[in-house]
Length: 121
Image 1 (cartoon, rainbow, N blue to C red):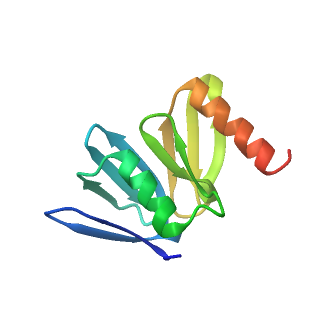
Image 2: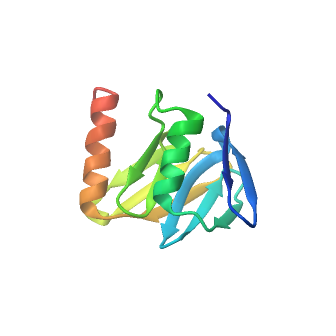
């Protein structure tokens, strides 16, 4: 599998190293791709298309990229905190960056259960 996520449309091509991709947040036809260097790129690609490209190009064997609800894909490598009651999730490398995000209680509850099962907690 590729080490890069590559997205292309009629106007642009975006290529991001898999280990740099922290999360993707979307609203409608636009998606914001956030990387560990603090950069954010807005692309005119729907989240479902990005989700498919992640699985096609990066493979789904490690399950490190997970979709949360309708508008968020996160890299579990950077997951440091989940609180469904507060609707909060934190993604961080515990050094250079920390992203505080919001998602629905139900989506975060499901993510918490998934992580607990995945790591047999």
